[in-house]
Length: 298
Image (cartoon, rainbow, N blue to C red; front, side, top):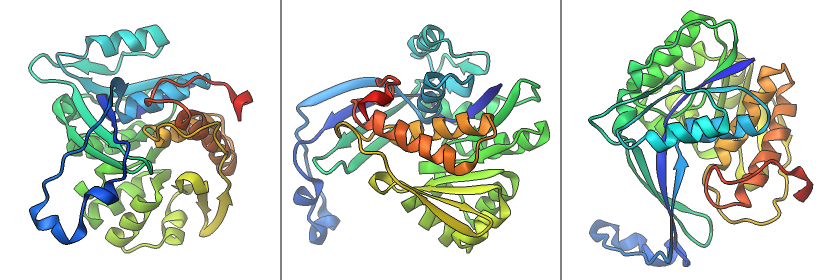
C-alpha cells in the first residue's frame, strides 16, 4: 500500500528568538513597523510539507510517494530520500530555479514568523498523477496554487481517495474554490486557525463540512484535536511530550500518522490518536525531520 503526498519540498532555515514577538512588535506602531530580532541559533533542515509528511509516514512503516518539485540545489534532498528508502519516482528536479526555501523564526512562546520563497514549487503542476493500483490514499497539501487544483482533479480522475490539507495555502483560494476541494476530497484536515478561515470563506460550519466528506479533522496543538464525522464532533486528547523544543513540522507529523491509519482502514479517531503521539515526538526535537520513532519516551 502506498500514499501519494502532493506538496512542497523545501529547505528550512530555522532560527530561534529567545524573547517574545509580542514584546517587540507594538500594535499601535504597525504602520511604521521596523524591527530586528537577534537569533543566536540558526539551522538548515530538510522540510516542506510533502517531505515532512513523507518522513513521518516512512517512520511508521508506510510507503510514501512524494509528488513534488525540486530546484537546481535539490540533489541533496533526492539523496536524502534515497537514504531513507522513500521513492523519488514522482519527484522532479528543475535546473533554472532554486528549491523552495522557508525562513522560520520561533519565539519563546512557540509563535512563528515565516518568510517563504516558493521557487520550484510554483512548477509543481508539471507533475501529473496517474492511476496506480498500489496507491491506496493521497493528500493534497500546501503547494503551488495550480498544482493543488490540478492534483486534486487528477486524484479524482485516478480514483484515489485523498485528504485536502490546505494549510498555509488556504488564503490563495476563495470560497468557491474551497467548496470544490471539499466536494472532491474524502477527508479534510486543518488546524484551528485554518478551520475558522475555511468556514468563513465557504460559508459552511464544521458540522456541514463533515457531512460532505468521510471526516473532517481540526488539530488544536497542545489541546489535541477534533474529529468531525456526520456532523458530530469527538475530541481527541493530546499526548504530553517529553519536552517542547520546536513546533516546526508537528502538523505534518500528525498528517503522516493520519495517512498511515487511512491506508489501513482505521477509524478516524484512532488515526488522530496516533497523530497526537507523532506530534508529541516531533515537538521534542529541533527541525521537522530529526525525530525518531520511540513512543517509550511519552
